[in-house]
Image (cartoon, rainbow, N blue to C red; front, side, top):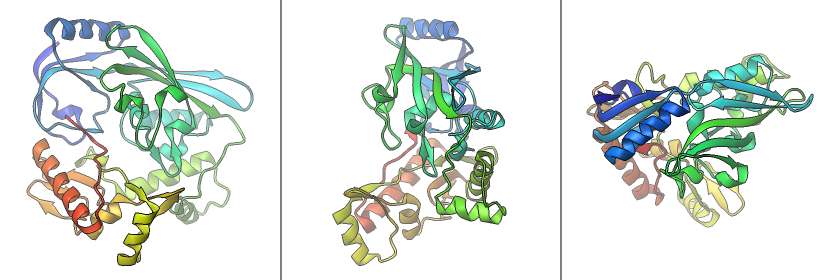
Length: 337
């Protein structure tokens, strides 16, 4: 147990903030010991995975716990499918690569997403036509009140767009210990209908892509437009893509003819990056903070010296300008601490 501990290495924004207490746990038993300590001292809790989806706006006056639970287990169901279970502390992209090496399909479109396995269901992470819910079976959690293990199935997780029970009524009540996915062993379903993937596969000279080819295409695309957190502080996409009623979208089309939209019944999803770019934010820097020059959806710690409050205030200005121009209120995807 460490006191007054710097969390700067534990968040991908590289923001300087201290936790009153910090510990790294490698087993469920160590986790329970840490929780007993927090209960005895009445300390608030902050669970850290890869630190890729949080913005620390101030020091944390409680116990920060880094979940370092490791391990991957594979169960063959039949010749077509397998169940693969990964502990919460496994790096997400390394887990995807592990599955691809075993020719297990279903995760390839989610390549190079930052963070750890344990946080993937919280956000229902997704990219290029695939979301966690599409291959999710269940997750084992620790009930923070009873300290008993529970299993949440697909239905119980109440997955939505970048949403789950763990962000709603279950927030602060559970910590995810491991996640199980159902993946294909053969006859893989290739999801390459997204234009960017199709174009990249053409650039790669591939006409009949494998799941490994799709993964490589996704990695190429992400590396071409998203900054590496190891080189410049960021948390990936900072905002959710907003979904608005079809009637509102049609009204906006009258004013902005080239506004992109992806219909879903009576609603339309609009790329937040496009909205932000139209408001002049792409590449714009204020003090230590900027919108990335290649992807307006990504806010960066441009100088490496930004505080969490500076980044938060920058995001507020973006939200205000998009609302003023389009009448759409962007929602932050990153967890604000």
